[in-house]
Image 1: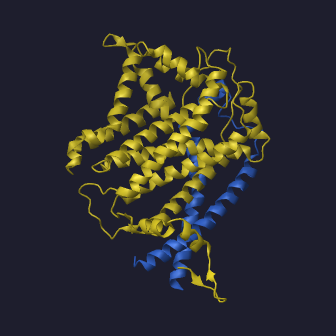
Image 2: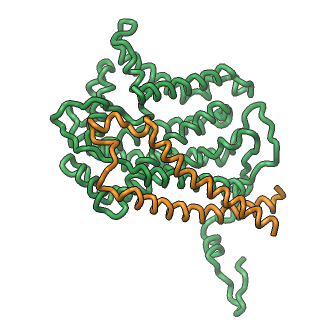
Image 3: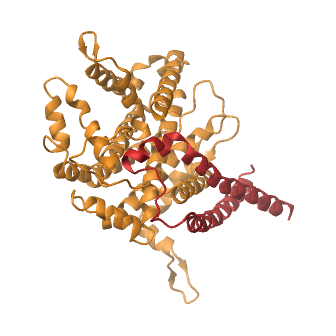
Length: 89
Length: 361
């Protein structure tokens, strides 16, 4: 029971880490290397495209994708823990 | 031998059916027996797998994009608009394709430099390194050929400038430019060439060379850096390392999903081929070191064309890089080969510095 709780706790922490990639993604995107803000006026790139779904819709989609990834993560992580236990790690 | 069912007939499961026809058990046994060393640098082993993950994303999203994309100057831009604004989740697929390309180059650089600094190219893994170097050139080729395809202003003028680079090569310069463009100017022939290279030639060669790279890696196993002691018993490749690799892939998926949805890849204005190049045209970040080196080079060096000197140095440096296992004799003798470590660190510093200078200029 204690071991299962430990696995659950680790999974929650790892999912929180995965969620934080959203923030990391935002920070990377804001960096001048990937955004090329200086070219947006000349080429039309870099500016937020108004014809795309708005940010709230895109965030909802991201949440769905992260939940799917988290589901797979828990399954694989549990399997890994099981294999480690069998191997005496 | 198949198990017997209650009725006395042999019990056929998917696994037993396959095992009778494909050497499943033997393949699994090889993966069970393959070991992954555990030491303080084990974390770097995951970047090769991450690169493979992003490459697979490229293949899947690339096929989906090819369903809608039309490689002619009249239709290319409009077809990308259809992908972005009409096809269901087309914007997400295109964003994932573009971001995965960038993440793949980034993880590949980490994988390559970690292998270099750990001297993983030592005997008998010379050909693993050489095939990896070929994969690097192929991936950069993917970036170069794919850049023109949206046919927007940035794509058009960056490719125009990029295809002009070989012009300084004596005798063959003009010929190389013509070969790349399919004529004097950048137009329909260039787009067809880039598209063919991007979706047929490069993927085919990448699958062959990548398969060879993986096969050699399975055969030789992961290299342990000189002087590093294995602290714990090694992982079995399957399932122990595969589970950990899958977790890394899921983290890569999460990062890609975040970038593709929060910062969707944009499409600029349609290229006006008669207009002059707007200011601020730059290539992708992984070509910025070459871009910046050409920018800072004087017009004339050693009474030679400056651009030619830079291009020659780059070609020689790439050749040297690919041939490192045959040059670094110290590493072959399992010595530390400090000079190559310093060289690796200097190359990393130069790449980061030039990327930063070009990006902030």
